Image 1 (cartoon, one colour):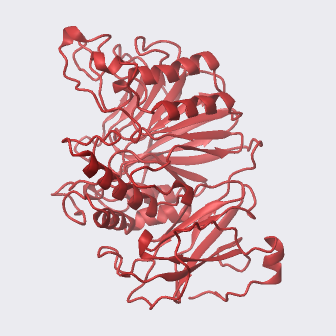
Image 2 (image 1 turned 135 degrees about the vertical axis):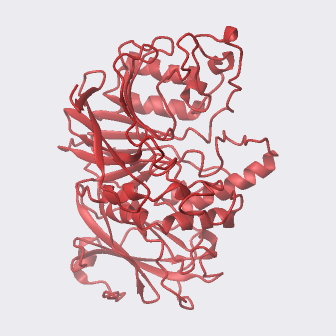
Image 3 (image 1 turned 90 degrees about the vertical axis):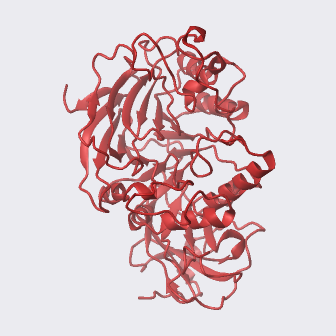
Length: 530
């Protein structure tokens, strides 16, 4: 049923918002809102989303796409889109109204930024309307007021959702956890490659995407997934990327196999724009050509400060990790120890250390893409081996961060990580040479939403007790799922959930829970009891 979208705004709404229906930042690139020629089909097939919550603001997202897999189906027309934010899901108490245009320059997407007038720690509902069609209703919660320490935050972190390996049943299970305040996505929102050709679902378009039109279609296909839509409708998201939003294992503008620089620039510009277009990110994050300002901070009062990292756009190229064993130092090929190599880049590293140093939050969280703690992956106990694509390939850059944590002691450093398709808990040692030193942080790794599928090892849950090669690794699980974290001023509890991806729905199982206590280094397993 279409709601009351009368453009007139009541006196009460005007008074409540200080005379403005909504504080929205558009920027010169946004087309002027005007009536379009109408839609051949329902335009909100990709759902709605919200992101970047602050104590008094939010970014609201949608895309008009009556024909999502064929360019959206709207051609060059520009459409007027209106949106409302209410205190109730029935929209009887409307707080904000706003209007903008959706044009072909940004794939008919909307990024409506409300920058004032919302209450801290408050639940709101929102919706869009265009040409007489009404979107699904979304919900979000604003962050606590800056400088305050709320009683708790419950958030989930997720990553790695390959459409071709199975269904996004983890999101259905996550939506059932209705006390979640926030979702953090750690990358691989889409996969740019052909995917699993014999999988239950095929990629559109087929093959590897390289053009703006192809990236837009791939994002649109993922957004058609009802489980993903439900998770976006239910919670506000904070997002960062990894590699597959652009190209597998890329480093800055280095692609494998090597491609001309101009080709890499054009393809990255297309990938980054499509990513921004389909994410609830503000206009300040919109890419300029092949560059996008991605690293940033997001706070939940003075309880949690998320330092959202970008370990792809600014990194040095990966090393050749096939050096002879006699040449290795502490198991690493010599180039991995080169102090000039960086995974963050000098500017981002300085930003991170400054933020950790000045933080007043009880818990400092690095929202990170690839494995942070060192891990000897060679099964031969007499030979060490480390992966080149994660922080083990950038030893000096990581050591600078570890030294800072050890010396400056920022409050409760926690690293949350995606990419590896396993659940895992690792105490982060103070040095790449000594894995059993007093930890300076704890790393919680979340498995994939669907990538790698259910496989044949559905019962592979490993609790490490006597791993002499990696004494800092406490737990690992090779299943699909997500992680929820319950944070209070005193404790951080991470619960590892698993699902099957053969069907869209799956009853989740909690396979392990770990706790970190305020001011106490290292994680303790509380479930199953040991």
